Amino acid sequence: MKIYLATDHAGFTLKEKVYAFLIEKGYTVEDCGAYEEDSADDFPDFISAAAKKVSGNQEDRAIIFGGSGQGEAMVANKFPGVRAAVFYSPILPKEAVDIAGNKSHDPFEMVRLTREHNDANVLSLAVRFVSEEDAKKAIEVFLGTSFSHAERHKRRIEKMTTIEEELVA
Image (cartoon, rainbow, N blue to C red; front, side, top):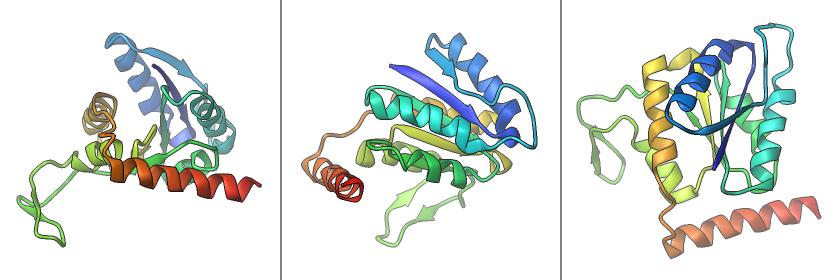
């Protein structure tokens, strides 16, 4: 697995820190830009480069960075086979309860679920809403969690792929 990094100017500093962090952990990493902090850059140029790589090899992953992470995820999700999820601050109340009554005390559960259920292959970090420490923890969860291969999840991903193919045709 190769990990591609891409950012806009807002995420440049965190991308550089994450690059060093991933190399230290032994991952193979490719930097797709931005290569300098320039507020006039256009993030789609860099995000597209990373997303295209993941689109071409489903075993690879990308971590993309932006102020909100939303625009970056929108660009990445334009590429066939790319499933980008945005991560914000992991702050939860002491006892978070979802609509079904399930309790969670893990602020990184969203990252875990997006890998297990949706086989997300791109993590978009909202750098204005997450600390460096929490970003690194989210990345560890993202890279350390496998897709569940449950039939219902495979079926749903297949439907996403079918929609992509219909839109391209």
